[in-house]
Image 1 (tube, helix red, strand yellow):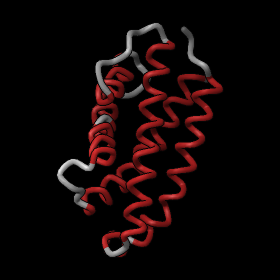
Image 2 (cartoon, one colour):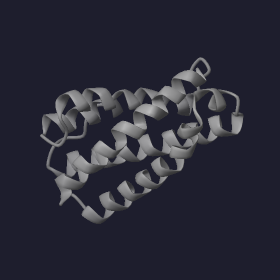
Image 3 (tube, rainbow, N blue to C red):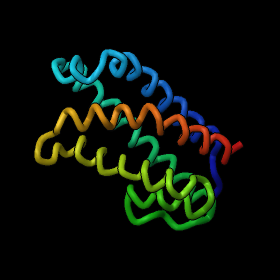
Image 4 (cartoon, helix red, strand yellow):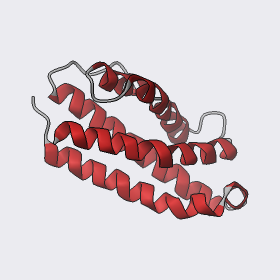
Length: 139
């Protein structure tokens, strides 16, 4: 199996579009976010979609590079570091998004909206780096 650059690029563009849509919500600040259930729902869904697509990209890049699929979503980020696509410290940090995705999908124990907002802030910093590293890898 090989990496399909068109597939990866399409997913990266979708991730970037979702990320851009979240900027205005971040700009309004945490207090406004915590008081607006529509913004909360929008952020939850966009974060879920972005992380899901990042995981799809991870699995495609890993298996397309001739490696076996990782055991789980968290491991998919770590594995990208092991094969030289991501910096190890960055991979460990962004791998936490897999847990966020699971909480968003399954609504484990309810959601702490202040933590979701913090995840939004982290995503606005980390996701562009992820996109850059994947783009560089497939170029």
